[in-house]
Amino acid sequence: MPEAASAPAVRAMIGDSEFDRDTALTRREPGVYDIDLSAGWTIISAVNGGYLLAVLGRALADALPHPDPFTISAHYLTASQPGPAVVRTDLVRTGRTLSTGQASLFQYDAEGNEVERIRVLASYGDLDSLPDDVRTSAKPPAIPPLEQCFGPQDGPSPVPGSSAITDRLFLKLDPSTLGWALGQPSGKGEMRAWFGLADGRDADPLSLLLAVDALPPTAFEIGLSGWVPTVELTVHVRCRPAPGPLRVSITTRNLAGGFLEEDAEVWDSADRLVAQSRQLARVRLG
Image 1 (cartoon, rainbow, N blue to C red):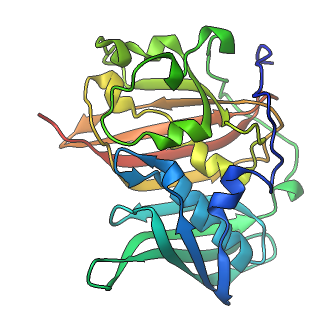
Image 2 (image 1 turned 135 degrees about the vertical axis):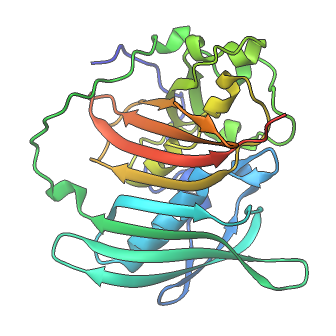
Image 3 (image 1 turned 90 degrees about the horizontal axis):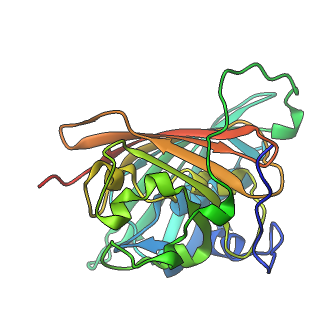
């Protein structure tokens, strides 16, 4: 079990938190949803990809007969901006244990033309119906106790532009992955942190979609700076997380041709691997 970590003083409940309000959609008609994307989840000049994935994940949870995302893959086509958006969903297939659907998020350009921002394909099931049997060689990441880690408030932001998302998060980074913030990146392509929501809301399957994409990019610790836009992100949700802070570990092994991968693991307070992800991201070299 991880060492005890203090939680935020104010605790919101699942279903009644800033995250829930900002991912809530209004059903216009079956399969069509309206939402006003919140500026509170922006980084630099764009809306965070994990927040957007949670929005689409919530729409699919409403549209499909099963409640929980098991696997969800998103292609980020154009950068989303705060403001009105439309989500359209389609049921692809439904079975006894899994249902599959697709969803797209659209916004409008200056001329009033509809622009597709993200397209998702996902399979949903019921996490509470899964057997308890676990056979794994995976081990939780070795992260120092929370009081020995550092959050965005502990130093100046090295990223120009909006960092509004950091006010929504309870984030404490492993000091061994913070060389980039001191101008001394390790070159290892690793990022580890304690993670939660700033209002104390416990994690659920939808917030795990945010957790895998909420840490600073591993590109910073490789020695790069600036925006690292996601091209594709696939998340596997393995089980419903226990209450308490999460531990997130992200690694990059290969940067080539201006693209890198980020492999993430999310562990809960009961030492269970609750989510895994891989994303392909673009970096600006030079």
